[in-house]
Length: 147
Image (cartoon, rainbow, N blue to C red):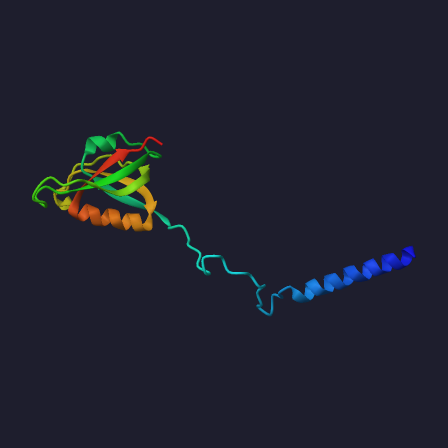
């Protein structure tokens, strides 16, 4: 009776292994195992790629306070003469990580008379585009984040 149990158990294991082997995809056939789609309808959002964005901050003294690793909010205020009255600044980037603070250099004539100091921030790609657009029409400032 014990032998019969062992044989039936061995036969069951062999059949299970054969069934699994037949159901598994082979490398040559290119078949994929059936996977249920995610609950959002099959679309999986990837986190945006982080890029290094050089940003010219209007207040050079504020940039001297920054160190790599600091977190900052970048604010854009309309340049002087662009609005009829005082305008509120808008936040362009929140919690951007400072990756580099290049040493200040004298502005040459080829810089087009730009003022301010450069800082390099790690931000998602869409935020980098928003920073570039804001820099074209506004003066940028930073606010150091505590946490």
